[in-house]
Length: 391
Image (cartoon, rainbow, N blue to C red; front, side):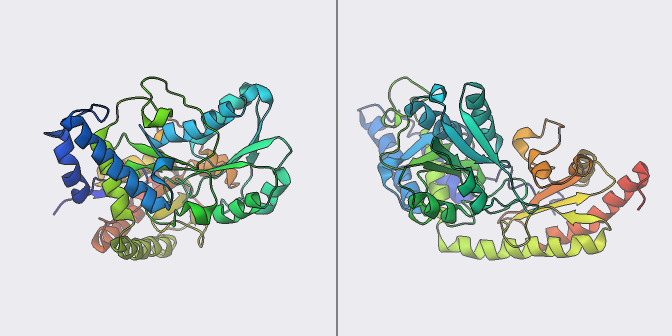
């Protein structure tokens, strides 16, 4: 029996065997450059086009509205910088609205634009991590040009009212462009862009059982956007650089699986495992507090705070026991600062350091969860004993 248990699917997912099978030919004999006119190149181009079509079908958009990138971070940056640049740049004093719990791939570009002259509103969230639509309405200004709200948060799994926001913006006479980072949502939530009412949407391959190094950005026809990377004019001029054919094929295969009926079965299974953890952890461990929303939460996300211990110490102790978990976003795990997400939920700084994120996936089993529930209380108890925690 494999003693290692992977519980960090929000960080990255293993490649699905079906996805890898589709990729292999383009890693070996079908190695052509999709820009070449000979047979090798044309077969590569056909594979890229097929993947683009699969993403478009998943999102219910046109194929020419899908642009492949090197990552979701690049796609987020392109959506933010590209739109503001197309609208005249930060020097025009545009107003941007984002939530206070955005992924760093949205937060950091907005902070850069803020330094360069743009006005940025960081919308607060409630204790569950939810953005208030009424607060968003109040934040709108005459110079508001762009709104970016994450569909589902990567740390606490809170699901935002994207469709509701989309309806609000659709009713306004002055156009405000709307972007959402749907990286964590794609496996579990409806990403139909017509229902969501978004102008741009970001996807990531390695969060949906595809390969790393590939992302995608949906850009609605007519949305003003300019490239950040210039060169040979790939991706219809929006993202130059030779296409990662095998990676794009992998994204296409992964997105096809995400939209299949089997995914619904996996969602039910994952939600049951999540609910088991949420129900049993507080019974097994005193002073364990769930972070985020109980109702409006991703089916695979569990985030608990364990007062009296350091999350990093808990993570390492569990790793030694054979369980891979996280204290928050993998993209900022090297940073020992408090989670901006937990602080935005009103969790005190000291408590924010005691959080643990458990994120599940389709390959997890009930037996693995039982093993984890047996080990977690022992590890927390030992660390609290060392720290001298008493309540």
